[in-house]
Image (cartoon, rainbow, N blue to C red; front, side, top):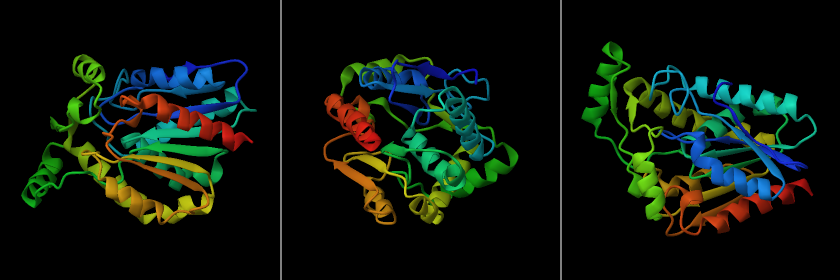
Length: 268
């Protein structure tokens, strides 16, 4: 719990557990927390293992389930500290993938009121040559903690030049991943598609925002994915012209409001 941050407001109508993406940290979501607080919604969130201020090996994960276990720790903190508040999960990019996998593995037994996703990493946007995958698979056996550049470029995240520059100089943003991390990430993507029926059976309300000009995540995959969910439970928005980080785009206030309004509407 060493990296967990709390953005609480009184009185509070709900609490959002925020799960950040690959290479980043919870500090990049302070503006989201401030917006939620202005709308009487509290927020908690921490740095995932291997990222931000966490103590684990940078850019590395032994098992993708370690992310799910960390989210479960944070969720139980919210349940214990705020037993009377509805709890919502919010996940961006890899955080969105973690959120979906969490629902598949833990959702049936956890008291959740809804889910919000922005550009979840359910399929990567670039095709990796087979020879590179073969080489990487060989290297995983002899050097699983070898770090390689993630390929995430700040200018592909948002049109906002200030945020691009801030991202480039942020010491907590980490641009490398280990070979082990990569294959665990790929396996999680396969799993989220195989077990999507588990999410459908939960009948949880979901707000799903997908950036239309996303180059990191395949935008078309989102349309395929939601077809496998209950259409009565999912509010889906495909956002033309937006890059990967919906909440950091120039018109972010529009989408921040969309999220807070949606959460408050669920409480009715």
